[in-house]
Amino acid sequence: MRSRSRVITPFGATSNGDDVIGGVDLGGRRAVVTGGASGIGAETARALAAAGAEVVLAVRDLRAGNETAKYIAAKTGNANVRAAELELTDRASVNRFAAAWEGPLHILVNNAGIMALPSLHRTREGWELQFATNHLGHFQLALGLHSALAAAQGARIVSLSSYGHALSPIVFDDIQFERRAYDPWLAYGQSKTANVLFAVEAAKRWADDAITANAVMPGAVRTNLLRHQLEDITPEVQATFDAFPWKSVEQGAATSVLLAASPLLRGVSGRYFEDCNEAEPTTDPALQHGVRPHALNEDDAARLWHVSEAMLRSLRNGSASTASSRSTSPRPNTP
Image: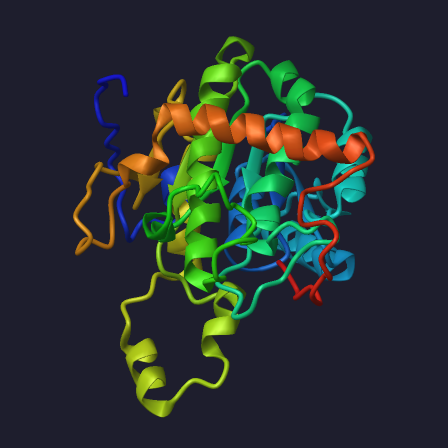
């Protein structure tokens, strides 16, 4: 990987979204935030709207999205906030969203996601659900919005990853868990590595379009993303959970907002940030921070891009993945 200076800002783990873009005027800028109906996505959208951006909440549940949009508009005084339907695991839904977009798009925050589903779930194409939701749906969305991003002349893509990327690289010979036993955290880790690798490759491919792309770790925040970990929890584990030093939602959104809109990050691309600063590479398994080398591997980033394109292309050609003949498990709710 090319040697370059680490990006350090005046902000940190306790900063919030308003802090990191204080005084920034986003009037005339347009943003899409996936999973914007609740949690970090809703707070990211609120901060961008408060700075004057036109914001679209791309959501599965349109009713919930509309309620959040109304709340943000009332809270910020910005009437240019609305919701639009987007189901990341439905290729037709992603295509409809992209096709309906008109004009330039300045900010795309790929925020929606699911985490550590206890049992294996597949899309109707046979794709493992965490990979399909967290990576492939956002990949298709970014491709569909590419011309709008290029038209903005300086667009930014923010790809939400996680420290969970440390749990697994992309297992290219069995992405869909067809031959190995399913593990919730390995599947999640693989999808979060994919989020970083997408930013690495998009930064290279779309540099001539003045599009930057970066990945972020928002930090530990108590949101609906944790719902599967809270099922059947024991009192002892609950006590440990409650004592954990969680970030607030406002603090969790800060790194996304920073990458999406701060002048400090103009021209910065293909990197991984946590606590509002570029993370340091590490291979120490004892550290629950930093970025693992496998998530920044440029060869893997290019390979994943090609694999992802091939998966989407197979649908256009009337086929699906090799797992398409398998039965599809019930799909859980996603943000």
